[in-house]
Length: 186
Image 1 (cartoon, rainbow, N blue to C red):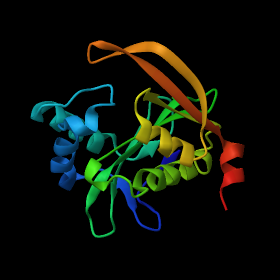
Image 2 (image 1 turned 90 degrees about the vertical axis):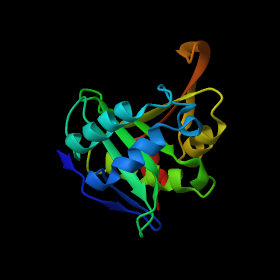
Image 3 (image 1 turned 120 degrees about the vertical axis):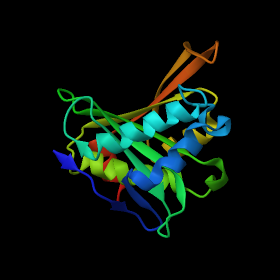
Image 4 (image 1 turned 180 degrees about the horizontal axis):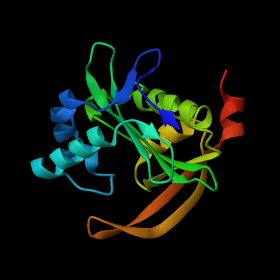
């Protein structure tokens, strides 16, 4: 069982959500410019508040199928940037799914890549995960760049695979294995 308190990178703090993060979750989940490539659209205040409550209640345990680490990403002085997620998808196959969402005003600085790398270190290290994959909508070029900088390979491009906001959308899947990640890390 993995219990996450706080992960630190050279520039970031990656930590469980707490009581002080309610306004951050309400903001990030209500914005069209953040959610346009996510499976949910902008959430109203009640929906976003329910998500914040779930994130806090869920805590920081990553032990079995169905568990999800949803961690806030901040600068050391506390500026909220976004979040990274790791979903435990299969105990038998030791598989997990990576996700993230960041405020656009903090884009282009490598924060998503750095925070996701910290989560991959945890997944392939302490959590003993064998394979991590990430799914994205086909038109999300910034997300593709993050995944490629992480060394993940593009494994599939599923044409018109999902309905997204009333239209058919392509889905692209990237993945990386534990041994591939270990070979890329210093």
